[in-house]
Length: 531
Ligand SMILES: NC(=O)c1ccc[n+]([C@@H]2O[C@H](COP(=O)([O-])OP(=O)(O)OC[C@H]3O[C@@H](n4cnc5c(N)ncnc54)[C@H](O)[C@@H]3O)[C@@H](O)[C@H]2O)c1
Ligand SMILES: O=C(O)[C@H](O)COP(=O)(O)O
Image 1 (tube, rainbow, N blue to C red):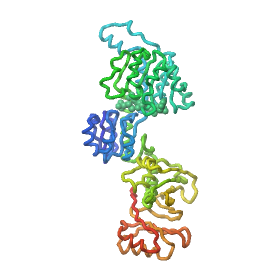
Image 2 (cartoon, rainbow, N blue to C red):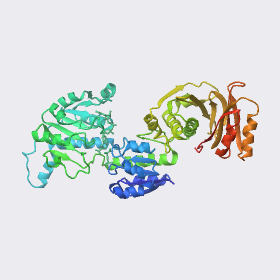
Image 3 (cartoon, helix red, strand yellow):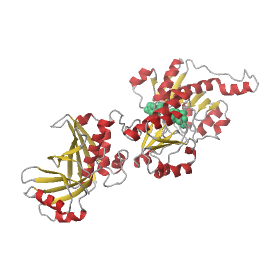
């Protein structure tokens, strides 16, 4: 039974779902903050469910020798070293929609709080001061709201802003004109947003392009008295520059939920008037936490139990519905890759994957990842569908995919063409109704070979006696042949033999086999045929 650790605070719903779906679960919500303890236990788990408190570093990933999936109950995965996880073949998934509305509502709450100085007015009133003249606010109606990042959360904020009778301008390089029109926002460039907005709210991920997007230079382009809301990620706004802009009066107020360093227990912003701070509460509502807990537990269980992949950051999605149909073809793609990977000793330069007929309509990204994993596994240990595409890219291998309508007798098949500096190798295969992969063509030579755990592949002259030679050697060394396939391109031309054996072909016998003049090459092969 797969075992999952929940190392941050999650709704109890998650624990129940794991249990109901056949996953053993340890709920230790404070463990994420105890780095050393987490390091010492992580090796026991197949899955790790987290929020933002657990930092999944390269060091933790190295210690996570059994880990297959990291599930983020929430959106931002900047607390996970994704390249390190991918290199180790660990899927990282999040729940991209579960807390969007809640976070958008928090941004709107901040907007009101800053516009009317509600927290300070509240504190003053609680203190019995009745400072009616001290707290003069600004109206929201008719003001311009600048939304930086108009994705799931930004677009909800934009719609709420429109509902509040604000004029909304949005900067998002990936926002289409059609989507902007649908939302009723004006798509603008960043500098124009800075120049026009009375309130600026940030909703982008934190990455190299967005880090410090609101900085000293940006403040200089803004209206005097602008108000800034950040419920996305600390680091988008340069805190030191914001402090200066607040001091100079350029910025009239700020609502900050996320900080450059979290947990933020000390921060220059804490001493500033009209700066409303919350401790990364954007997603903290009962509804959002139910949503993300339920989703992450379902997604992780589906992956660990059924192989379905949903909302993965570093792997193509495979729905629970398509998983049963796709699985045999994933295995097929992997064994095709494994065949070429085992017979290729020189560096691979190019890979082409042809999807014919029904396979062209399947989840090609998943099939490609599986083929690449099979292909490079003989050269690099510990590779899977997550890490293979990265490793192929790192090695500078050129990858291309071709899809075409059904072209032959089979409903669909996959053909792999692998080019090295020495030669180009091809192999094609399909799955029969029994769900087992079959090789149907090698080097352009047709055959119908069931794929077994142990096989022997030879290239040979098309001369009488090949069956006798191969059969005789196997018999002499007590290796039983389960299936025997011969093929050739023309009588007397290039020929191949593929033997499905009940056990490994003994390495010491290879020389004896290769000494035979009719045999040009002989290669024992091994395949993992478990689906
Ligand atoms: N405070 C919280 O508790 C909380 C809760 C949930 C999400 N978040 C954070 O909110 C942010 C937005 O989340 P989301 O779900 O809307 O993400 P999303 O992916 O749906 O939207 C992000 C948008 O940013 C845009 N974008 C990317 N680079 C940009 C750039 N350089 N300039 C302008 N726009 C750019 C993208 O095109 C996309 O439309 C993330 O950083 C997420 O981690 C915070
Ligand atoms: O990215 C997110 O989903 C938010 O930052 C929420 O983080 P949390 O789960 O730690 O509240």
